[in-house]
Image (cartoon, rainbow over the protein chains, first blue to last red):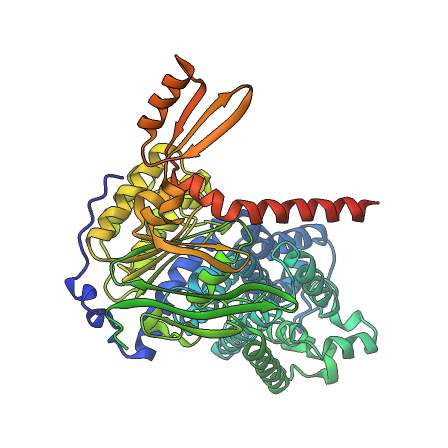
Amino acid sequence: MTANLTAASPARNEGGTGKAITENGLARAVRLGVLRIGYEVRAYFRQGDTVFFTFLFPVVMLTIFSVSFSEASFGRTADGDDITAARFFLPAMLAAGVLLSGLQNLAIDIAIEKSDGTLKRLAGSPLPVVSYFIGKLGQSFVTGLMQAILLLALGFTVFQVPLPEDPANWWTFAWVFAFGVLTSAILGIALSAVPRSGKSANAVVIPIVLVLQFISGVYLRFSDLPEWLQNVAAVFPLKWMAQGMRSVFLPDELRVLETNESWNLGGIAIALSIWLVVGLIVTRLTFRWIRKDS
Amino acid sequence: MNSTETVIEVRDLRKTYGDLTAVDGISFDIHRGETFALLGPNGAGKSTTIEILEGYRDRSSGDVRVLGVDPGRGGLDWTARLGIVLQSSGESGNVTVGEQLQHFAALYPNPRDVDEVIAAVGLESKAGVLIRKLSGGQRRRVDVAVGIVGAPELLFLDEPTTGFDPEARRNFWQLIRTLQSEGASILLTTHYLDEAAQLSDRAGIIAGGRMVDLAPIDQIGGRESRVPLVRWLENGERREQRTEAPATLVSELVGRFGGEPESLEVIRPSLEDVYLDLVGHEYAAEMAADNLNETEAAR
């Protein structure tokens, strides 16, 4: 620590005029946002508990369900083939992964960053709040996409799940995934305001996510649930994401098991839009770099 | 107002939380290029004051300007000119020292060279190590590095050397002297009075939310409190006398006793002695009152 620092610029000793941020505000926010994505993704994969409970959890569950129910049939295709457990649970786990990578990840992560001083440090730096959000959304998107690819690869190679050939199905997958991650991530940021400390974040967030998975057709077959419970689940976004994923990966004949015997893609878009707006409003009202005067 | 002369102006700053008054009308200026130490016991209002200046807290009343800007309304252009080393951090630290500094350097318009900053805080050998794997003192040095990587005009250091070993502390002082020679202005709070004496030009002493003294560091407490003190034992009784001429007094005592005076001490008050004199009585009284209340409550 024998200090040997090069003075960054003589201008800063003359009133600081040479140090002003000259770049356009939005361009700078986006550039730093992209930088944050790299920083956030790297930090994500170095957290053992996040990697397990958020990233690998759906992969583990798909494996358990596919193996334990390998003798069971989850319906028949038009050709009379049985639908295997792996094929049945793949879309469910894809939907769960979207919820975990967006909502669970960010709600816990940001609640911890609020209480451990990360946000306070950032608030004292010239990082725009928008860049911070871009970083978080990008982290959810990148890790969610890697998780989806891992699930698809596992289903296809190990459990021989047939993947759709029609490009229209992949287009549905793309928008349900992207819209789902965006909505889940914004709801995660909104939900991060609830835990009073980083330590309580898991206790607040995980039960919500777990209950949603049980009532939204992730672990249990949606058509087996009582109608009133289906109606409750239909208020929340996960039911719609799971339905969208089923429309992609299950044969069209299974549509008869859905509400009103329809995949209802329009309904999915509407439900996710409403939750996105709700999340944005709550975030706008509650998100602060720091709790002043706490 | 000439903002090139004064980097911080505080006038009659007050901060209350309900019935509690944390800061009770303090005023001071910090000049460009100056290092100013804010000293005082825990709970005196130091951290509240520094956090108001950093823009983290709102004030109840008073007028504050930091680099010519009201910290309650400072934008990104303003924070880009500041370096802030907060009191403590418990961040998860899932990035390496090098990654953290690269990242923070990228946020500033005119940053320092990252490798130089890492070397300046003595962490060259730890550049590739995750921050969570560092010791407390090493993490503190990362905080300092992040605080200076943006080449700030004004640096806030809130108890920067807590957890440093003596050698790291001396090296840190050397680093601060380098920053000073480049013209940085610094606001420092510390519990180590030798650190304040080593680094700062002026100091303000806060107790109970009020500024009890404000002076160049070698004049804190006034001339009177710096006058050497001679202590000795006479007929089993402790005697002491302040005098500008301690040697003369001692030789008088030798003459009077016809030999060595018993338990002779000549004390030249250090900043610490002066400081404890200034805050000690009030502080001690408060502590005693607290203890009494607790005892009462326990009954």
